[in-house]
Length: 163
Image (tube, helix red, strand yellow):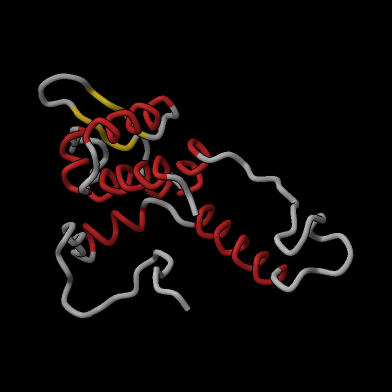
């Protein structure tokens, strides 16, 4: 659905949203990376990009670190997504070599349009506030890599099993 850069950027920004208190609490790139099980140098690079885009602000030195540059409810997932993903304007039909939307629709056309519409809604309507609320108001905590929460929940990733 999106690149590793976008995934890491959302993970880093969501961690900053979890602890957001108006900018008082700052986290280092190392703290963010370790809390999300991500590579430290990659997170540092991503935070630089987020900072240049005005989504996070960083303060160097002791007592420094990163915080969101504005409240989590003012940052949409799309604001992060657009930094790392290119707009796909392809009209190619997966059913054949033609242009999708011209002539009879292919067997997948309706479903593909539904999926794209759902992704667009998710990116444009979801803000980082959902992470702040989950962490601060509801007490939800991420599960560490390699651990399994009680009960089973469905993964957001596509299944690797063959059908």
